[in-house]
Length: 461
Image 1 (tube, rainbow, N blue to C red):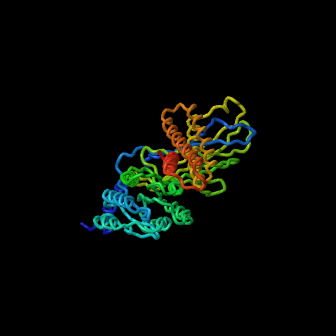
Image 2: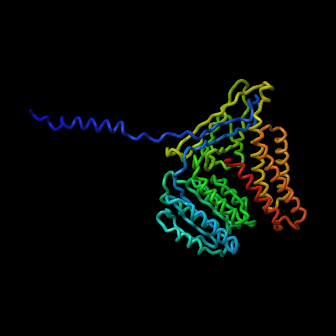
Image 3: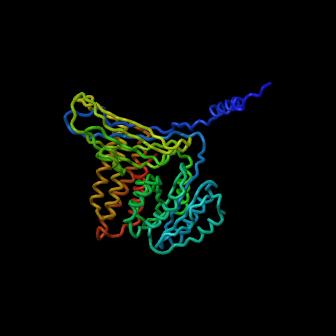
């Protein structure tokens, strides 16, 4: 029998290879669809022929995930080792670091930076299965408290450690533990901007009563991190572990909200958040991360130019972009759009969403609380008291109208924090010889508790 040409003999084999390549090809990972975005306005319609302000709530939410996270954590621990940490504070901080190191997984990365009069890299960025953990513990034990407080150098050094060789999809975490006021806060905005660019959230844990809670809270809010106050070492260890290991239930990371307004509409205020302008009518807000079951409500106040009745105003486009932490898909987006009719009908104009209104009042009060604490630190006690009083009254009115049992405890806690802070500010103003006199421990505690509560309310919950 004549032999077939070689090319013809190869055809069946090539056909099999082709079929295997088609049917055996791995499908790209699917969007787990656990993140949603919605926009809700506080009222049903806009009045005709007049300029008006309207608020919109942007709801970014994450559903429960079905499996444990396996994404590595890329963690930087930044510890204040200035002279004010001598004694129990530094011992408790070392104990908290030991506890975190013991709980990290082999695939996680860690760097440890301290700062006093200068910054020092105690542990360069390393993968945990590439180093003997006993060596890490020995380095932590060698940390001592001394010198002044160059917080900016510590933050900048930690970001340098996190930046190189970062792997896509890693959970980037920078946790700052401090108990004092920095020598020079001037460089901090630049480091905050760098952290935002890298997508690194800064969680700030304030220890004791002598630190600047407004400054630490701003570092956290502007990068999408968290702010917490710790009175003692045991509480510090718990907060530190919660921040690091809570990330393992994360659904969306490096969450950014992009807002664009329609014709005749401008953004007057993003309540309690710093919006970065990305265009003539566009802003970007850093939201941080979303763990399962969390929702981030962002309240946007819009100025709308006079409109004709019967028209529909295109108010706002919202896009939330995030790193998927569940399906390994990469960067994903959700979009929402809201428009509103223009009317002269008083009955239509009277229709409002009480839940959005209550949430807006609460967000305004939280932002005002942080502003009042900052005013009080500048010695402007009267202005701080008036600001708190106005927002306390607004919360009281909202409580009277609100029928949402789920929101009442949150409003009541907020009012309690404001009432406590108002009382301490009043006592300080009456007793202090000058507006610049040192603040007593009770006022310091009230300010830190109120700042933590307000920051939490403005973030994912």
